Image (cartoon, rainbow, N blue to C red):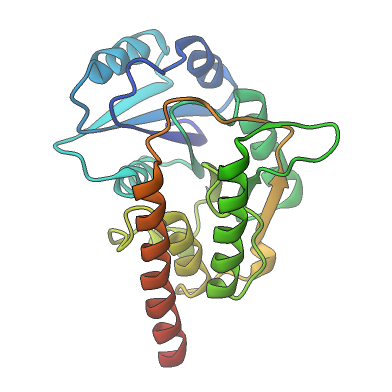
Length: 247
């Protein structure tokens, strides 16, 4: 098992997978790629098998029997990687909206800063190339503000699909059971880590502003999913604060 495993959840992604980029990621020293096929009904399984065959042992695929949702696909993949001996794990979106050089930079920053958790943040600063549609940006800012209030820590971008974790008891315990949320699992995972056994400190988390990020067409997040994500956040808020009072 490679030292670091990047989990890629996939549901009907046959038309969007960038073979060359994933092969380049898997060719980086110490990096492995684990695709999790979340019950796809298109040609995703065949594409993943082809990638694994060309990945020189650094690309593997896990197939779930049915569509369990992105959160469960991520959780299953992270657990599989940790149980296989990875010392660091993380996940990125199948469309590689966070490109390979940025993924490698996040992992380098994890080592340089000795962080337990590193999270990409889509901040449109001068000198960066963050291509995001305006309405998604502003909705994201509202959501991140609400998530920060729920968690009690300042998080700029909870929903960026590029996060990495060291193998620690806190991370393993946070992944032990399925997420209650299907659409806001990132927030739930951060909350589990902050309230875990043992809990992580806010100082254990580092957000890294991305230099490049692209809002790739074909996203499965539409208006209905955004409403469901907001509802999920409300449910997480209630559970999070109930557990805080119990502690």
